Length: 426
Image 1 (cartoon, helix red, strand yellow):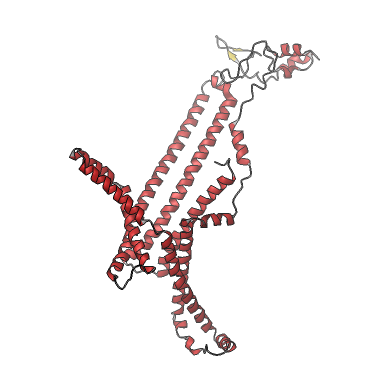
Image 2 (image 1 turned 90 degrees about the vertical axis):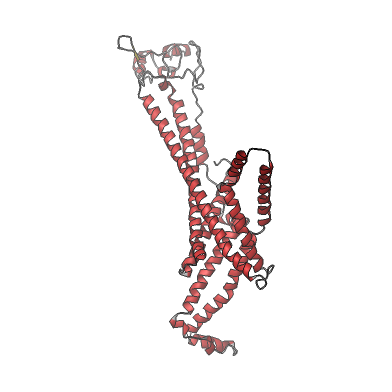
């Protein structure tokens, strides 16, 4: 076996591939033919190909420190390039800690919005069951059976014997008890939900008065009339101001009806205002739904444009790289950056995938909100225009809106808890 100095001399001036030549000298030519740098050739002036030189190395002259030409030290450590993709993959392959359904349910119920939507689902679910119960009890078959034929003042055994002897009376009795008990519960849930969203009128009124005061200051200023008009137009003639006005409009009449339900206002003393409040509460909610749909469709359009722009930019970059790589790959300096270029490509791919996934999540949440608003729109359209529609179908729109809203809260809280349990999760 030759000494180390002999091996480095035989391996080349840089000593990069000396491990290929750690063999007997008589096998030197045979081993040299297997050198990984043999595939790289240089073009001569007259078009011929020069034999590969052991002084050529596929080392980047910009990103890797250059060595002295006679350095006997191996440069394997200098060739190590940090791979961000491997780090990202290691993070992604780490087992994801997911919150339990019980913890997630507690988190949802700890919020006012979560309590409101759960109450809405229960309220409209019970109303649908009550509507079907009343419909079943009033059918021609069950309508002929009356519970007055049963003596409920007798002993329990006698009452049960009479009911068992006539099973149809058990159905009538069960439906009647179900309606009597749960009709009151639906009213309580309605009051409960209104109380959860109550208390916003004072803040909305103060905010509106503040804006009116600012507008009065503009009118009293010494500016030109055209400037004042332009400022008034920019401050008030927009969808933001219209949304604030409609929100106050709805909150005022919604809390007015709540005051009637809990006894703060007497329906007997002010019956006209109550009818007025019922009518305008539905109209105010209708306008808020329409404005909400307009805002969500605009947001969805912006996200779609952002997604398309991201895809186009990424495709343009990839096509540009492929085009450059086809131009004299043996002579192009880009070929010297193979590992680094692959690392950058993988990093860009991870960033692109992450951004695209984020936009997709946002679009999905916006689509859920649009679907929820459409359910509210269908439900309130019946109330505003007094349309004749099957009652269970009408109530089903309300149940659908509540279920979609609850699913949105569930998804958002689940994502938050996953980020808390997995700090490295993007």
